[in-house]
Length: 342
Image 1: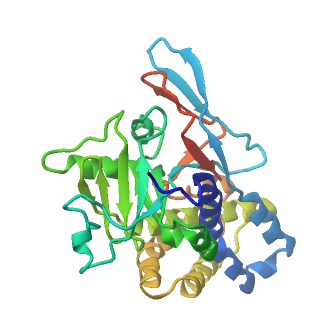
Image 2: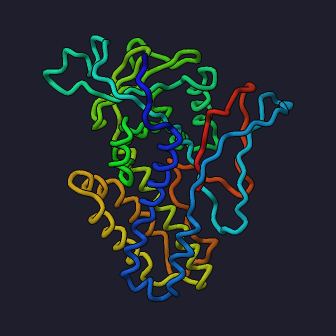
Image 3: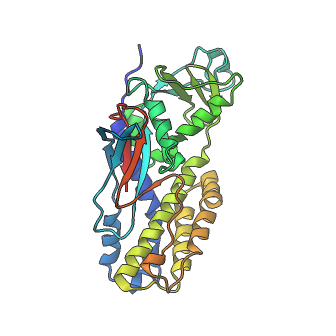
């Protein structure tokens, strides 16, 4: 009998998505010590931070088929009060259970490996929803031209007990694996012989608690998880916050301070130095630093709101005021697919 999940998907979703957003704008607090903050009334910062909220919704499907076939799906949001576009992430959360071993003879977690490593691990089940078609639905989203492929991810929190969850609240994302859906397919297809994640088959994703060792079965293969994905997502979200800060300040004051780039970059560096420790700090500077610096190079003090550069979009999809429309080849149940907007 399967272990009971002590923490459900919705709890992880509410907490981890908010951690991601809060962390991405944490560097703004370091601007509070810069000359930039003294150029504006104190309530500016509070007003700006309150604008950046995140919420989750489920996909809806219209039942009308078009002349070209398929079904229309629409994601919309009222955003008239904002001067910038919203961002969309398909983060498919999964809750896992603790396992002491895996019986597959080649597994990282086979009992024969106990003399090498701890075989305790987290087991997640995927492709078990939407009539066992959830993975192909997510694959279809990732392959949709209007959606950034890597904005469609599985989120596997490496936390299995309420006590551990409570201990790590505020720091959950550092104990979470972010896996692009297409990366699972890519690595499965690269096996010899090739493996396919098909409809109707429930699969397991197993990972060590530190995220260093991962594997997938029904059809077994080792999965090379890229721990750098989290830093790349954070990098993009920080650039989004900078874009929105520029929008806010120009709208309020009509211009940007001539030291805007330097002040923001210094605040970002202070944030990395204070928040991250050890190897994570090194990775943050290597993976996030250049992206933030390169993005800031596009700014100047004379730019208008219309000239503000759009932040990078690889791990998030821009959701314009007209919303996002796309088609599916067949009428499918999308009720198990959630998305996050901020």
